[in-house]
Amino acid sequence: MKVNGTPTRTVWMEGSTVRMINQPLLPHRFEIVDLPAYTDTARSISTMVVRGAGAIGATAGYAMAQAALAAPDAGFHDAVAEAAKVVQATRPTAQNLFYAVRRVLRAVEACGDDLTAAREAAVAAAQDIADDDAACCEAIGRHGGPLVPEGARVSTHCNAGWLAFVDWGSALSPVYVAQRQGRRPFVWVDETRPRSQGARLTAWELAQEGVAHAVIADNATGHYMRTGQVDLVIVGSDRIAANGDVANKIGTYSSAVVAAANGIPFYVAAPTTTIDPDCPSGDRIPIEERGQDEVCYTWGWSDEGRFIRVRTTPNQSGARNPAFDVTPAALVAGIITEKGIVPATPEGIASVARR
Ligand code: MRU
Image 1 (cartoon, protein in one colour):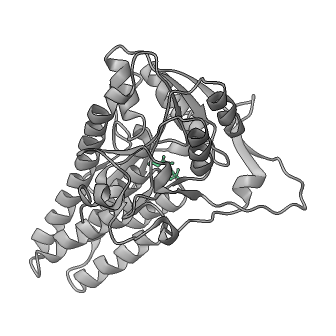
Image 2 (cartoon, protein in one colour):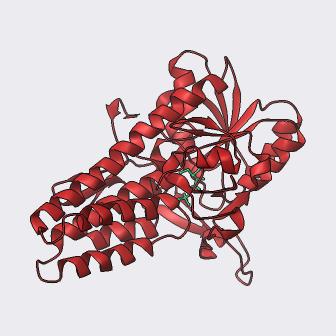
């Protein structure tokens, strides 16, 4: 997708340096951050400089490639295995992260003691993961685009646009296709507290593409659904269980319940790398609980141009901060994948899942 007219990806690798968009600075500042070592790249995932399932997966793949490039000949395989542990510990929910680490490890292990080949294979696998993510998201747009007719009003939660992937995005890809085909979609953008990925990232992306949209407080979504102003919902996913249950950003479940109460189709868009075939149901998806400061404080730019945080809750109040929730398969109209739209059922999931 384009930033100020220039085609841009969220994350890429140049030599042994990983480069990515510094997402916490958006929408007010667009900067690229350079990460020279795999430990820096891993930290960019845990601190959410990069976030979103596909982007996290691509970043994890690149981190593993950096680890392989830097690992000494003596103890090479141990060093790469240690790096895999570090990268896998950065965030618990997004399946793409674990998929990417496994894919690079497999490529390295297949080279045995040929360490030159192993390093090359790690870099190639990481690049394939990123390219595959972009291609899958583009295909999701092709399959999901027809769900967005002329003037459709689409509700979305969090950011599942191209910033959450390498390019195109999942939930927003059908919207971008509809826009480019002249169908003038409109998007209701849930603010998505506490980190405001909707208000900060989805709104910025849609503005860059010229898609009509309005940011709404999370608690306004039900109002627009009940009053007939939402035609369909499309959200992304961080992990999809084998039975079709879907984990996504906290608040997604509430949106799905209200959509069902109002007869509004609720779609989930995700590349098949987000499916966890070994996870039988949503009850087994690990839900990340983040620090309470994300709820008690908010970050933003002051009128003086300083990036500051301000406390919004009483000093003596604690908070809870689950980052994701699970939407039961029964509430999902279909899963838009790069292989087509499948039902959120064990059979539908099995027909597209990959390892
Ligand atoms: O915590 P984040 O920002 O990494 O979470 C991302 C999401 O949960 C989004 O909901 C997104 O829709 C999933 S699709 C990448």
